[in-house]
Structures are given as structure tokens and as C-alpha cells.
Image (cartoon, rainbow, N blue to C red; front, side, top):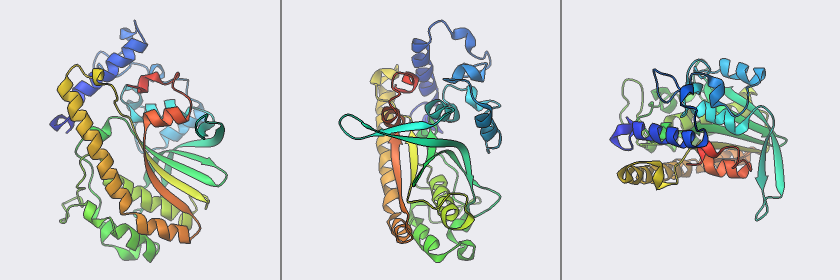
Length: 302
């Protein structure tokens, strides 16, 4: 649970204080039963959601439209608020950011993993000619130090893998998990990185590119873990909590680098097949800056 380190309640309180500073006089919008949830999902969104986007969330694995997207700390609401209904624009080029790239956005992208019934769900997929960026978005979840294990079949069922390269490449990540499998699989060693989820995403992306056709075979593909972060000590009403937070973020970055380092062989194998592939850890603050949306998305800049 998050309380072993940074207090979940303290984080939620800080998010609400920040939101209230930006939306004074709107205390009445919150649920009486849960002080961190709005009564109406629409009040948690930057703009009304188009029907096609709503259908994507309805088809997803979560229950975002039923409850989760009403929470100020909702990763699904954050994802939608960042990318919206239309094309997403990312800017490149220092120092003036003169290169603008337009991407089509798809939410709740489902890709077949080892178990075709339990598909991998990517929060958002940005696509343009020759390039795909698949996003796994985390708001406060990464601060927890408990994540689902990796099913044992991913490390022991070679015959189910579509090819030997993928099996060998992913085997390089074996030491990111505890040696002995529990009832539900291999527990990750990382405190903050959802290693099993990222492992499954990498498998599913490879499978979708080269076998199932769920993704177009394209030149450049990136899996981006995008995490919400806190940059101001004043976010907390307790300096000790901020110190715990700083430690947690440092640990997350170290865990991600360990994950990425073990993907080297698989990245090389994909390059041999004509696809440049990489994984990236990106903060929400950095993504907002790349999208030139600092003024519209101040609620996520804490």
C-alpha cells in the first residue's frame, strides 16, 4: 500500500488543494461519500467527451466511465484531458519548438498478449505515418509499492511464443522478478514500476506488429510510460512527505532504467526486422510541455 512510503491520503489532499486553487468556489461539485471524487464526470474533464471516445472507454477493461473518471487522481481522466477528442500535437526542435507533428489518438488500445483472452490494454495510442507511440499512463498508482505479478506462463511456455527471438529477448528480464513463483506468478522486485504490466505490453506490441496485425508494421514504435510527478515541496502540508516522495521518484527512475537495460537484445532483434523500437519514461509535465498545453493543463502541474 502507498502508506508504507508516501501517504495516499496526503497525495489526494494535495491534488484537491491544487484543484481548488484553480477552481475556487466549486466545493459543492464533490461527492459527499468520497471527498476526492466529483459528482459529475464532466466536471473532471477539460472538454466534453465525443461519443467515439466514450465508446473506446466503454470497450476497455476498466470501469472508467462508471466511477473512476470522476476522481481527481484518475489516470484515465488525465489521459483524456491531455489528448482530448481530436488530433494530438507534439512539438520538437530546440530552442524554439518549430517542428509540430500531428497524431491520431486511439484510447484503450487492446493488443493480444500470451493469453488471447487477457489482452494488454494501452491507455492511448498516437499514430502518424511511419510512427506509433503507445502510452501507459500513471497518475498516483506508481507511488504504490504493490503490483500484480507476472503469470508464470510468460517465463516458462516457450511453445506459446510466436517466435524464439521474442522468448529469448524477454527471458533477459527474468531477474527483474523474484525467483520463486507464487500462486499468481512471479512478483516483481521493483517497488514502483509495474514491471509485469510493461513486460506484457512489450510482448503484445511485438505480437501486434509481426503476427496479429493489430498494429500496422511501421518504421518507429515507442512504448512510453508517462507518470504524473510532484515538483513543488509546498504540494504537501508535511515536508517529511515530500522527502519520501523524492525518494520514491528516484527509485522509479532507477527501476525503469533497469527494465530498459534488459530490453537491449529484443530492441536489436526488432531493428533487424526493420522496426526501430524503444521504451521511454516521460513525466506528465514533460509531455504537457511538448504539447504546448501548459496553460490549459495547470491542474497536472503540481
